[in-house]
Length: 200
Image (cartoon, rainbow, N blue to C red; front, side):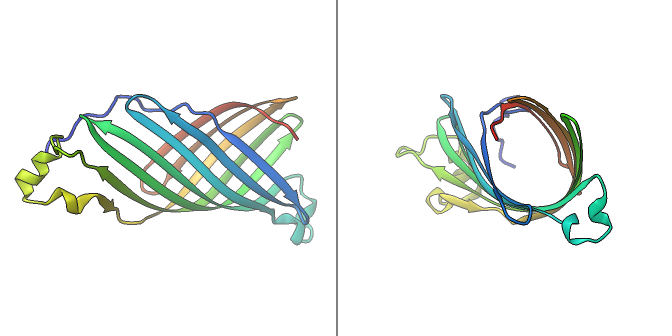
C-alpha cells in the first residue's frame, strides 16, 4: 500500500468553450470544439474535439413527417491536463470517442433532447521527474523496488461504456442556456451546465 495525496476537494471545473458548426448537404453538420488552456499555479486543462451529426428521419418514410428530430452523432475529443502534487509534475492525457443516437424536440425557443450512446476512452499519465527525485514518488521506488525512470509514461487499460443522457437548451436571441445530465453503465454521473453566446 502506497499513501497518495488527497484530492483538491473540487467536484467541478468551470472553463470557457468555443464551439463552431458547419452545415453540409443532406442535413449533416460538422462540429468543432475547443477549450483554451486553463492554467493556475498547480493545474492546467485544455480540450479539443471534432464531431459529425446526421439526421436519420429524412431517410425513413412516414416517420420523416413526425415533429421530432432523430440523429446520429460521432465525435472524438482529446483532454490534456497537468498538475503538481507535492512538487511532482504529472500530465494526464485522455482521448475519447463517442457515438450517440439523439432524439430531440424543439418548441419555440426551447429544445429538449435525450440520447443513448457508446464511449471508448484511452488514457495515459506522463511523469515529469525532477533531477533530485525528492518527490513523494520516491516512496514508490523504495517500497516497490521500481526504477522511476522506467515509469515516465503509464498507459491505462482502454475503457468502453454505454451511456444515457437527457438535456435541454434555451435560445434567447444571442444567449444560449443549456444543461444536461449523463449516467453511464459503469456508474459514472456527469452534470453539465453552461451559458453562451451563439451566432448563426
